[in-house]
Image 1 (cartoon, rainbow, N blue to C red):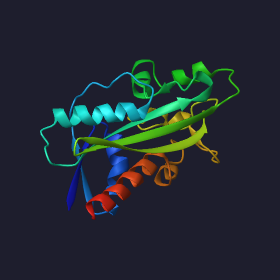
Image 2: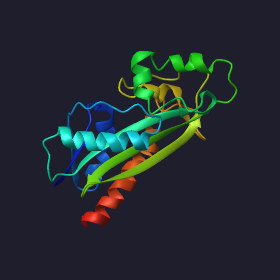
Image 3: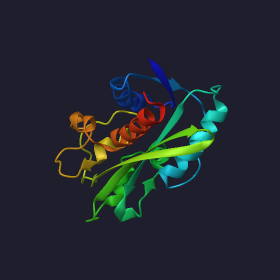
Image 4: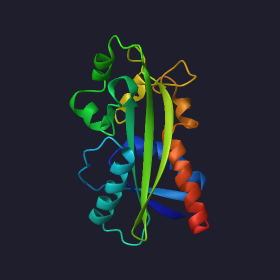
Length: 191
């Protein structure tokens, strides 16, 4: 089984992505490298720099190494927290989002995931997006590594990602980015 190395310390993301790789006959192997994340709102820029830094920090040379970054963008507050979502959740707490949204009629939000890989010195980025809205109150209990799932209801749904785990098995943001990456990999490597 061919291996793809994934630079992450987030067990939740690893657990979500592993089955998609296994379906394609690939083993997703976690590589725990500690690299600083650039301060940016755009997940593509963050993922690109994380790919470069992670490859340099790891001891991998010819192996395929990917990184993933997900942002949570809320329209009414200028796209905040964006790619800074994890930092915001760690410092202020994801629940603080509801305070920022209090009284706000525009509840539109989206998740955007970027997966980056370096091949022959060039970074390739694959993205996936999921539109939805921020509920008036917390709905369901999120996985500790995926704090915004209680604060996001996908478009056309009544329950949050935390309430209905089956929503994440379908075409949600991370799966869309993973699919694009795996399709490219199959074509590129003729797997």
